[in-house]
Length: 386
Image (cartoon, rainbow, N blue to C red; front, side, top):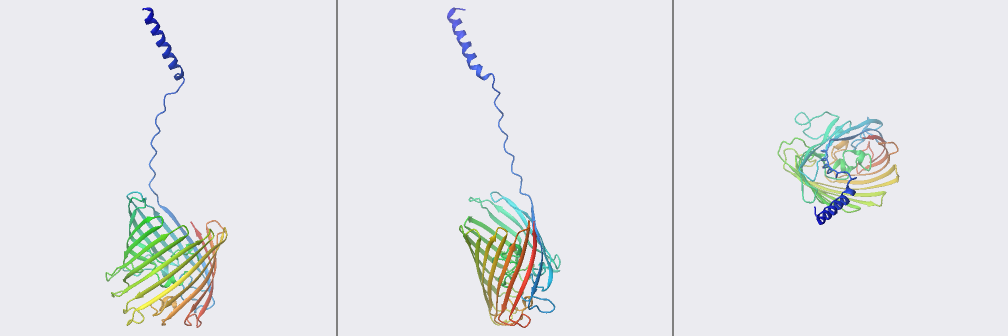
């Protein structure tokens, strides 16, 4: 080989050796990381509570009835209020998905919640049992990620602050607005949509207030608009529909609920209701329309990390006694006015347990409480939440 070529060859080998030397001790490049496994589908969630209580009234009607009350209707008696079972399969709002929700209530509370048509001709789970909710949800995704939901089945009311599950209410006993001017449940179809974090809407068509089976084909319409900000929430509910059997007379009204948080330890609610039912044979006076209105206020304050105080004051004016006549032991009297004051301690000193001593005063414009116009009651509730 000529000398120039030998020099080029030597230089080339030297360059290759210099390049290869740093790479000789390195491991081969790592394989790409596997794609993350898809998220598991939502599973059923089970929850609920068990509750028992004792109540006493100074003016119980013999043998031991506390007039005008719902769950706490027995004086000087221990009550097995509820075994609540909830099964929920949540839906994913960001995709085409479906969910299901069921609430089953067993115990003495269930006895006063039965829907009409829940007997032999309808859906009956026994005297001390009630399916308060059972519905399927179909979700369609939307651009804002909240989805639009279509629901079919049985639902609790949209109205008011208080709900059937008393363990989540500020007070233990249910107030006059929940008992007399709201429906408990409805069976039908519902559409839900959340415009943003501060506005949502619910629209419902159903068989009527507390009816599983309807014989006359009439339907009830109810809608709710919710508006929220950092510390304030407003809910407005409107309803209209023929509620009485074999009658086309409409019942319509409005329910407004305002909530204001007062710092991190206190909250205030104000609720107002107005309703009217056109004259029909089911009213105490079938010759005239019936109207009613009610207002209530709640204050809840954290006294310590494990103790909360809740106070409630409410007033109901049932001018034609359409909502109170003969209800829960009350008399069929005209122009009935009811008001009450309630104070409740919510004690959470034991894990998963809620202990609630309560004092309440009820007043009527008539002497309905064992011959008097007022009664004082004392109660103690103990619940375990799971």
